[in-house]
Image 1 (tube, each protein chain N blue to C red):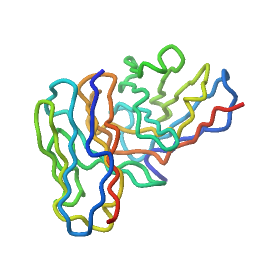
Image 2: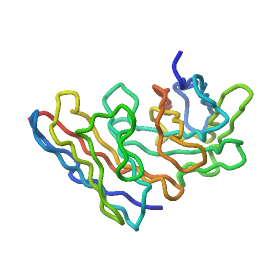
Image 3: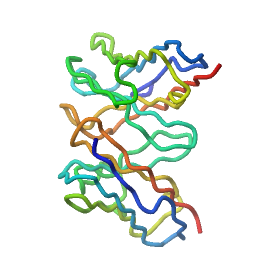
Image 4: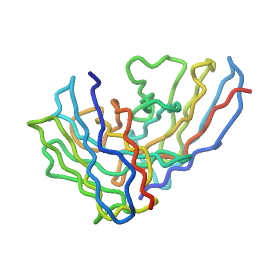
Length: 121
Length: 107
């Protein structure tokens, strides 16, 4: 059992929607903010979104604002990234990552292995 | 958004070499810079946080320094397992941002 496990990635057409899931284990999930980071093919890491411990604060990079939403269910140790109006430039490997310390805005000490999203017609 | 510019974008080095990677921020930041190592097919690994603190389990040949806008990751004696891409990240202000990466290759 790995601490973070992403799922939901697939091949999808432009304009469609997709929800990614991140299942957490082996740590006190409700005590840590969780983030999504992506890596497009041949490119570097790009922070996408983050959510506070209680889910009352969410953050997004400008290119996904208004299209992506992030949520969490602390009773299930799950984080979700809802991606709407997908574009070709959203094609990437999506990682979820746990923050090092409690509170938001901290580096990421635990990462999942990633789930691949391909947006193409 | 705070922009992070890494240099060089790539370098070739030999085992045992001292390697220095620079990260320049578009505005001053303090105690919020992190460094990661990323290998193909693997999850990124946190090396340094709060500018200069070594993450638990990371070898002491890795160190971070700097302040304000200029930061450095140093590997004092490059080992075979250190060939990877390295990224800096600022955790001061949303949106959180990463540098463009520095690929360390075998000479």
